[in-house]
Image (cartoon, rainbow, N blue to C red; front, top):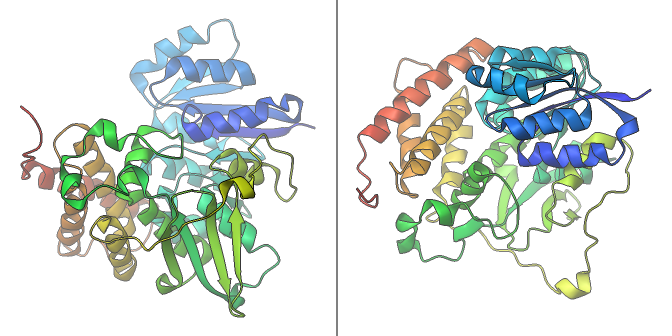
Length: 396
């Protein structure tokens, strides 16, 4: 029988790559649900191509447009955050969690509650509520498969190994758009410049997060949560070629590296077919032509997000939820022209300080309600910090 699958966040880059793989073997899958945001034409096209049972947009005001785009298809249309969570609750064997941001937490938790396999591309889930997510998965007998290229690489390097033998985990970073820029020029970086990645084809938000290294900072926290290692056992190396995605160091001095092209279909395909390996339509590397792999330590002056991530792990509690909410709000501020590129990290650091000294919120018990509450408080505090900030680089 075909495997029942759902794709939460189908219109983004991860969702589109997932659909590409599924459509290469359509008889093997029965698609239950696809969800998206404002790109209604793409969402409807995906739903039709996959013969999905239901298509859901996150925005209530776009429901009529989605219904019109699906007219005659027999595919159910729905809208709103609650409808996305309901779609995630529909029985499926494998669910891709690729919704961007904290909005992916509740649908992912709903998917885990049915004891399915969750392919987790929404890193915010582990950053905001790692222990809660993992405990929910265990309680319901669910399987969580990492889809970030780095965490998929670590997972693969650990197959057949004992965690007790692991001394360190090294995740790599391309360095993003500004890895070679003079430090003094970073404050003048434009939105267009920050939205262009040298190696990966991704959405705008994650591409900017790559340039600021907030993406990698979140992956450091995600590594700690998913693999249950100490913060000091996690390292970051800048690797401009983006072909070695992670390395695992063992107590005998060996390093196991995962090498592959910068193509998300590898990590997605591994999660989709696990425990089997299937042939994938990705580039086969010519190591002789590549010639060399370069590595260097990240400069914390260029990428303060990495330092802040270490502070978040040291603070513990709900600091990860504060970090993510402040990061998302600061990113909105940069995209809107309210902040300079370099001011985003200032807003995140200020928000963490505000919430840490603001009534014990960070130390609250990790429940879904508390995570959502502190997410709200952190966004409010970050917006207040932005309002106090004057971006002298924005032209009026």
